[in-house]
Amino acid sequence: MRTLLNIIWIIFAGFWLFLGYVLAGVLLCIPIITIPWAIASLRTAGYVIWPFGRTIVAKPTAGVGSFLGNVVWVILAGWWLALGHLTSGIALCLTIIGIPMAIADFKMIPISLMPLGKDIVSTREGAFA
Image (cartoon, rainbow, N blue to C red; front, side, top):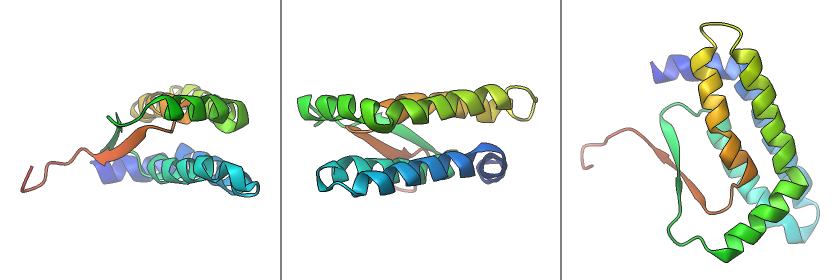
């Protein structure tokens, strides 16, 4: 079921949001000082293209540096990406099939605003979990 939801997600919203994160990552690689934000953007792009079956958790070691970095991120690219998630989430709510994807889209707004200090982990239980 996760694979089917991910495929539908890519078709209706995921690909365009993925391109937004990749574009932000590439643009943030231009000035050398913003490369940590570019890495966070590209890491989040991998989550945005295939979100079902994974979740976001806070890093226990994240501190003031992550908070300050997130403030810079919101100014540079975060609010544009959050606006993209909000717009596509509202559009996905117009159909019954799109509602689960809209919920996933709305759940991505916090990481689009504050990607530093977060980890993306699988929700699947393994043999040794």
